[in-house]
Each structure stands twice: as structure tokens, then as C-alpha cells.
Length: 159
Image 1 (cartoon, rainbow, N blue to C red):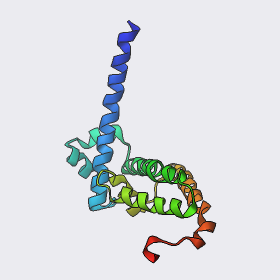
Image 2: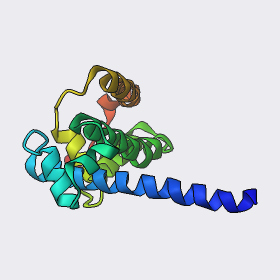
Image 3: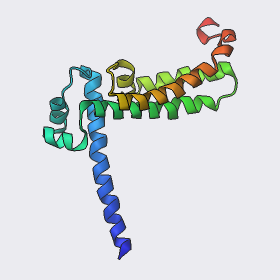
Image 4: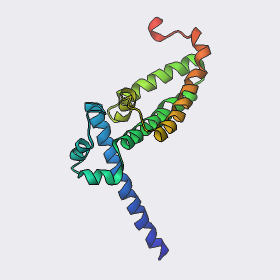
């Protein structure tokens, strides 16, 4: 009997996660196209064919949506850019890899969250901003680690 209860829990959990992901994807697209300030919760709800109340069932505010988009963008950047570049030997090659991977992620159609993160400077509420600041600090620390070695780096366009 307990075995049959587990699939129900899993199905219910997946059902609650998927709508949130769809909301975030749609909001990221709208924020990218219209800008954060010009996009209302009504716009997001209408694009999803949801009532405004249905949208608020998943997220308390537009700021909360922005925080989750930014957090996901930082996850993408950390996973596809920073962690990959950390595995590269040599400062010059690491820097080249970091730049190449960052450009690939920024121009990717599937990762709209990145462009939202880069273009929106809307201040997050204090609690969310402090969590985001910790992640930004970790990324900055990685960037500063190669600072002293960059003086001798020749870039491809200088060759």
C-alpha cells in the first residue's frame, strides 16, 4: 500500500513545479521584450491564459518572479560558464573559455533569463537581494582570481 502512495506524491509534486516553470519562462520572455517595469502581472497572466488570482497562487509578486528568474540565470551562468571555465588550465585559455561560454549563453534563445539578468537593474526586496548578493560575490571572486594574470594575456583580435 505505501508503494502506491509514492507515485501520487510524485505526480502531485511535478504538477506544482511545472506551472511555476512555465510562468517563469513566460515572464522572462515578457521582461525581455517589454522590460520589467513595463510588464504587469496582468500581462503575465494574460500571456499564460491564467487569471491574475491563478498567477498569485504560484508567486506573491512580480519581484518574486524576477528573483526566481535571476536565480535561475545565475544557476545557468555558474553551471555553463564559471564551472566549465574553472576546469580549464592556464589563465589565458581560461579567460578565452570564459568569454566564449558567456557569449554563447547570452545569445542563446532558450536562456532568456540571462538577458533579463543583464538588462534589468530593478532592485529586489532586501531579503531576496541579500541572497542574490552572496551569489554575485562568489562569481566576482572567481573573476578577480584571474585579475593579476590578465596583464600578460594576448587576445585573439590582437594576434
